[in-house]
Length: 246
Image (cartoon, rainbow, N blue to C red):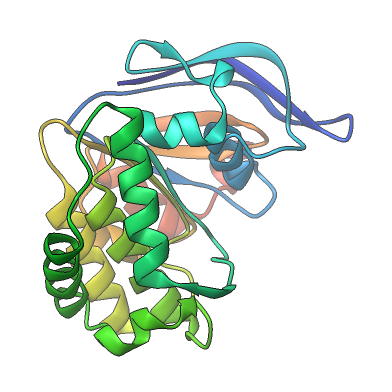
């Protein structure tokens, strides 16, 4: 599904990613763990097509297409979703309008019919209830007045409605209390499927108690230093990254 080969990325002339290679197949959940400054969020932003990141070497293929050649909206239409570490607020644009517009724009790009307003609202309500979101909140501007935990729940709601092929979740567990973490983790579990994949970027093992990954990668200094299964996440939690970095 996603193939990253020898990816080098710089920001304002400073190398951040230094030869990253990673392959993610359909049905897989990959957890990317590493300390602050390792380049985890840089990877997420490069995959989404954010400006300011210069790819100096390497390739990224998504569902057989050159991902780096696509504009951000084309990547979204192709089935890539990014859950932000710090979700932004968009005053004046309601969550419901924002998501229905985004969903139908993506469907149009794929040659699919629009979702009628009534069908969209019914599904939006059902997904919101599953995440413990008050539907009245979704009439507000995007993320306006939301707590940190509500913003992360709202992103899980967006993911459920957009149904991407690959969800890149950048520290989606950040700022969540125990109850909110369980709710968001349950949403990720519902999203999992044989034709979908997840790249879960995190500092901590705790979310992996609820979303058991198929692969875990220790990410240090712009590249993957070690890969394994769920046991690697537990070892990193217990030992830290010093031994791997040594």
